[in-house]
Image (cartoon, rainbow over all chains, first blue to last red):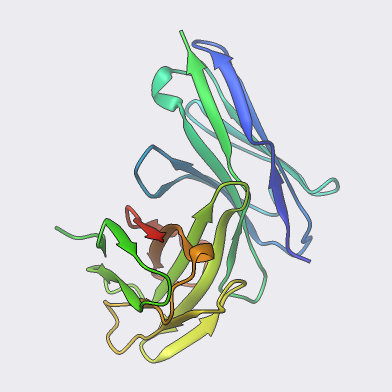
Length: 111
Length: 114
């Protein structure tokens, strides 16, 4: 079945690294995404990774994909208060037009 | 300005009433989607559309109706609102299937059913 899971909350100190984890169940996923939602707004795409990649780095963001364990993570280096938001992972299903979202992880950054 | 616009931003309605949430995009994206966001459930797909006059059900489509007579508009109608439909509704669009075409989201409509 289709199920994407994340822990609900993460709290980190400003300047530390944040790691947000996600597990998914469909091994046929072609792309996996990370979206960010700030208060009162819609979701914005942060980054994505193709399923044949293990890692993708984009400035402060590092995405790691472990296909064997169906585990996706997002690392934010030097976390800032502006990074406080809800982060959603999502998987695209092969041969469909659907994107399945996780439950979202609320990241709180404190000084 | 180009973008995706949802209206209204907030809506309060009574149980049993019909209510329509509007979504308009200016990119001429072929795909449009409706999601609802609820605590503990993340985003769940209600309906999506690959092109004008083509719509498909998502995982939580019961009680909802959509239409896509024009590429740029994708209204969502609750035929007889229930309290369980109290939620934040997001419309999104993309220029391809969800493979490597990111979704662009509106700012959401917060609907309360009393």
